[in-house]
Length: 404
View (tube, rainbow, N blue to C red):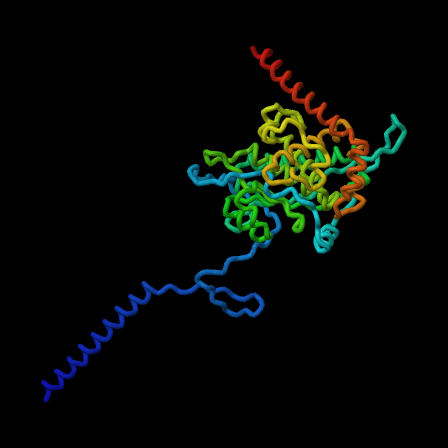
């Protein structure tokens, strides 16, 4: 009897030890393999909410710019990556500008304020003079993987500074030129937003979001009037490095569009693109303005010797076909440069007329009547074009002689 009790006691002990061992092994396996889901607390209800394993894509929400103190870095790209051939004029096809009623309402809703100034007494002239403040609020953000960053958080410091410099100089030059032509009392200030896409993928995401996906593959940048938003792709060269000349030129071009939209709203295609080309060119050459070699002109226009006649820029015709786009832009640039340098009186009349119809394109028949009532303008443009080309070649030859 005693032996059987002892055996029964040992059996129970063995069973207990086995159960304890199995339980310990199970606990170890559970602890080493279990991964708890992350949780967050709903701020309003104070309830725990499980975070999904793969969060849904977050819509762009533009944050307020913040100061980022970590060392700036420049993202480098694979030089072998296939890059699309970019056409700087692709975003703005040469079409009649016909904004809808909703477009006009959105344009009018932009918060414009008169250009501020300070009155100072000049003892020499014994008159009160106005000193205008050229500052205009600009928000420049880089979009990388759907996240907004400040310039210094993505670009090296010298490149970030050059981007800011191009934007500021473009705005200052336009203010100075327009004050000279229109007078400061006619000008407005309003915020400009510039987004720089860090990669081609970011550029595609932004354009898709604003409904401009047709321009993803070919455009270097664009200005969306309905969003009052300038956008630039980060332009790269064949080595995968930033092509600063093209990149900064595109930024100047789109900044000029944004500035013009504040002053005039929708304009006829020749004037809005001619003005943007005029200010872009100042960052792509050491000789600002319409001052180039014959080769540069030929490359831009496809070997067409003269700019187009003005009526072919103004009204739909065979010249408006896509294959002639380079000639259209170069010709518009030539006319704007002529008005800026030689006939500011005509430019004043054009811009005055555009501004009186704020947010609506000026009637083209009236523009033609202002600019070329006697059909003599093209003769002046031809003569000037020949002189500028000749002067440029003489200057280059003189420089070569001086360097010998």
